[in-house]
Image (cartoon, rainbow, N blue to C red; front, side):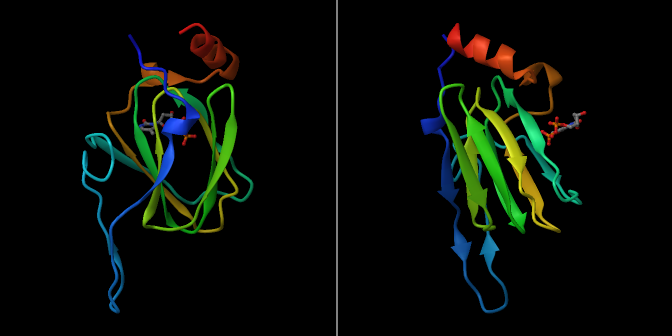
Length: 140
Ligand code: TYD
């Protein structure tokens, strides 16, 4: 049976931060600081003002979204509830579990959005139509 993940399973994770006058250092270990093994890293950058990214849900993928530089908002939606998470710290990541619709907007100039993912890119893992996604959720 597929676990029915909801918005309450998603949360901001505070990552280790080694403060140093020479510059701070943060590290992320798979299955320790994030609840999945890390198999892919990708990042969004050079995002023009007013752009929106995301607009989909993943069927099985777990992700951690980090504002490596600048700021943006991640809007999560499980078909029943919607919540906006402003991210603006390199030591705080938003854990997004499978079957949660997400959009990312309000990018500041020069921001970098890094995503750690539990699997390689697979287009079959996406729900790209919101109505279909809600329908699948309500029938599972
Ligand atoms: P998509 O996940 O839709 O971007 P976003 O959610 O940030 O708006 O991906 C955009 C395009 O990039 C799409 O054609 C698939 C491709 N892509 C890859 O080839 N590999 C990847 O790891 C990712 C995340 C996307």
